[in-house]
Image 1 (spheres, helix red, strand yellow):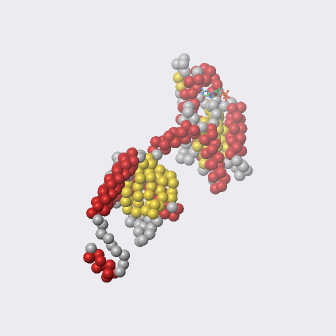
Image 2 (cartoon, rainbow, N blue to C red):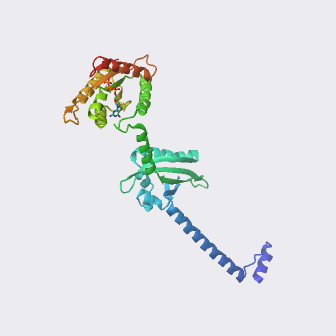
Image 3 (cartoon, protein in one colour):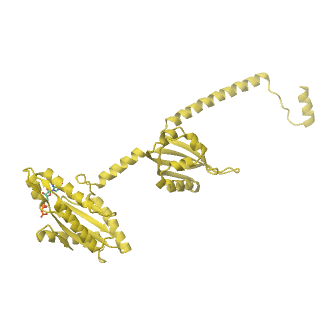
Length: 334
Ligand SMILES: Nc1nc2c(ncn2[C@@H]2O[C@H](COP(=O)(O)OP(=O)(O)OP(=O)(O)O)[C@@H](O)[C@H]2O)c(=O)[nH]1
């Protein structure tokens, strides 16, 4: 007590009263309670983090160092979290090479924009499997006091969703019987190619093919055999395609080809090859006898006066009907 008195005398400031034993005990009990409460919360958080099927992460931008990843990292990436925390190159190495530039660019964008939602990229798991991730990232702490910004994010495995989207896209654009593009998809793509060819003044060829006397095939050999013929004709169509060409079933027994960058002599060679390939097909009817099929083809090229794709389509269609009128199994230029 004297000490206290003496100190007050010297400094003349407010008195510092040492805690009584009871107060110390109370503070100790309170601190213990806090520790217990904090450890309970920590357990709760780690249970939550462990049960979320997404990787939560925090990244120190200045030091280019991952400072936290949740347990799901090891599940989703199939790689060691300790390695990632030790060296950020571990993340770069796990990103699918074609997507790395995009993944790094969008990470930088988080700093500029404050947040980037739904950046999607592929990773290669430790076991070599390819997975799709969707990442939502934002700046959790702006750089201050000489420390750099911290970026946090939540990365979700969307591989199944991507597969489903791909399957839906395939179903929406493919003809079920022949597996070639359906009419709508063919014309959607063809219109884009038409615009490009007009814009860059590049050649473009359009071909329409129709199987001759197809009704008779159905009537003689049955609808199932007719389906088989359609499938084999479609296979021939796909076989003559070059990279960038389009092929689609645009009607019952009618198919179309669009050949970007294809000059007339090459387009005619392709048409002749297609006609030959289809003529070579051989089918066995219900009576055991073999039969073949022929096609009528209308071919046309982009002209400066063509305002849209329908102008080319109309010419190819007219040429194809001329081929029918002239006795079928032939190619007519329109
Ligand atoms: N098996 C089968 N037949 C189909 C399909 N779609 C359309 N058809 C048939 O294709 C036939 C087309 O007949 P038409 O339009 O008279 O033509 P065509 O007999 O080929 O006569 P030309 O065109 O003059 O050579 C019809 O009998 C349709 O029922 C299909 O998906 N499968």
